[in-house]
Length: 167
Image (tube, rainbow, N blue to C red):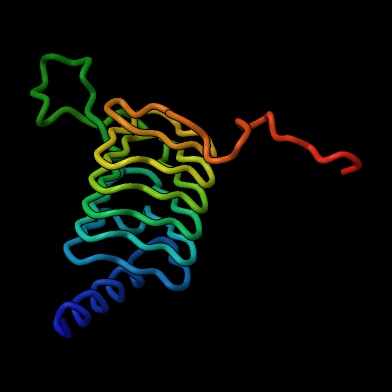
């Protein structure tokens, strides 16, 4: 237990020095890997579960109070599939893929994979083992492969919030 705590602390310290931005109370589970850490910005009070894996040629932006379950993957890269003369293994990446953005208060379940250009909205929940290829709206609960919204966390859907009389 002490060895695990020391290793986790060393991992956090290593990434604190290498990440583009990292907020206070950042915690990172054992076995996590962040490739291109200078492209990654992490807010305050973020927990990334064990085995988290991130790679992207462009930005990965993670807001405040975000939590990841174990083995979450953020994959921001791609290969140019249009040129069949070049083996896929050596195909160049398309220019400037859009960033991956995870807004404040999101919860990403165990073994979720999030692909390039996806935005996870404020307060959204993504269920375990989901494959996220499109944006997830704020305050929604989304699951599956491909990931889709199954309901919203509030009583009313976004844009249809109830307004109190006189307010």
